[in-house]
Image (cartoon, rainbow, N blue to C red):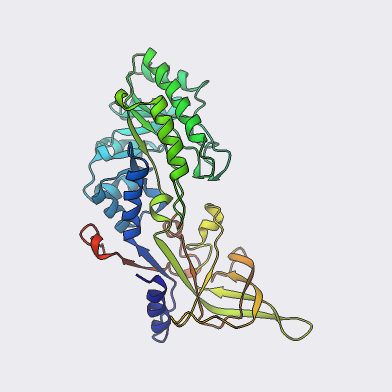
Length: 399
């Protein structure tokens, strides 16, 4: 399937009918392929999809049908998963700091597996859901990650974890495993070995208290952009698991991938609706501000919150592949709102564009549309879904 041809048909041809919203294409076959890649690269690790990354019902439904588990952070996310027939034993409530009402909802839905990293959380769970199966989250940070998480969540595995386990034991609570998250978009594969080794030490200490823990959650951090390979991380993880948690110990291994599954599945197309040209001393255009129909209060919030660097690709109006011979000019891209912060990117060199020209942004499936607002009254983009014929049985679209 040629995504550019779909964009040409859906945007350039519909523009004559007054269509001027941004448009996503979601390739659900790409999501399905990622599931196959995961099983090949990390055969011992069951993926629990991080719903917060992209809560699109069609993605959640497809992953549910393929058999993944789900990492949920709130009662709304729990409900979003349960509605697709997922049983509670396929959910980990992976928020170490939960509101009381959300813990009560977990109890009401029998979503028993949940994380903690503090005495306060233990006391809340003891009071509200004493039958919960708890997973202690330890801290082990990557040297480089797109979104570090350790400053917010995770206890020190040597200093705090033993005390928390003793507290849990004194409260009569069941601790069934250890979790960690090295950071979203991890660029430090060796950190997984360090974290798995630290988890082994906590497992062993827990055994001295009488706990027989059965679960290791290795969190997220797996890349998902087009061309990205989880092979380096997988090699580190597989080797560390063999050394510290060999299969004969019977410990279940799970992970919380998010962007791995959905980043490359989504491509966004935006249209130039206005421009402001600044002339140089010679009378020629020196630089241009292009205004497009999506911005940082919409899908490009990922620039602010997910530290993404986005790069536009100009969509040709024809499929013949002819070179664009228009003069190139220094330019910047701006979103549609009236806020001066709404800048997508700058210091670009693009052809001198016309109103109605379209730019395409790949790898827009993670932490983008799921966080988008309608600030200033601008709508979120439409999403069009497609899949290869071989995946049609697994893909059942929700309108």
